[in-house]
Amino acid sequence: MAGVALATLLLLLALAPGAFARTDQFPAAPTAPPPAEVAPELAWRESTPVGLWWAGRLRRGVQLPAEGPDWFTWDPVLKRTPDRGWRRWGTDRLVRTVVDVLAAYRLANPREPRVGVGDLSRRHGGDFGVRYGLLGHGSHQNGLDVDVDYPRQDGHQRRPHKPSQVDLRLAQDLVDRFVAAGARTVYVGPSLSLKGPRRIVVPLVHHDDHLHVRLPLSGPPG
Ligand SMILES: [Zn+2]
Image (cartoon, rainbow, N blue to C red; front, side, top):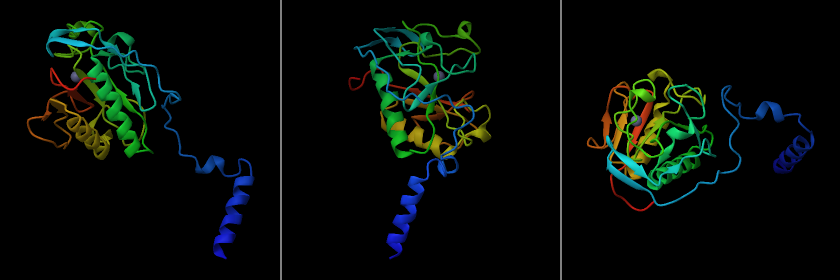
């Protein structure tokens, strides 16, 4: 009979409008922008990476939308969301990889916030160095590099600014997923104990607040 009592209790709770709604909702992170409710349209087309990651260009790139159900974009220079549109171009293969990996990550971690995505390449690729802000990028030239922010322990949807803010379990999950998705290199922070195949997951200075994913020059079509 306990089952009947429980069912009755649940029914009463359901009928009491708003009585418990406020207390049992998952608290939203204070800085979280409202999630995109509808997946944005992506203008898919077949892209061509030209040259190398650090000396190349991008033909027929695809723009990553400012936000989606599983990601927001982060401008590393202005330190705000979204990232400016001209910094969000990649090959179709890269954009598809980001969207698919982050969708799978969110399915596996349904209570966790969306993931921040930083710069990809400029619309036609090419130099993305210091003149584009801060240190600029030594690579990100041919639409095959993307920066992804580590998830934060406090769940805030902004790039962490010190290693102690990084949720290492979730960060490792992201690293593992990008390796499984065929990354050629994943640069990670030297202060974080992130692991992976030694030739792929490489510690590099200036990567304690975001990981850098590099896809190979060729791969399965996006
Ligand atoms: Zn990068």
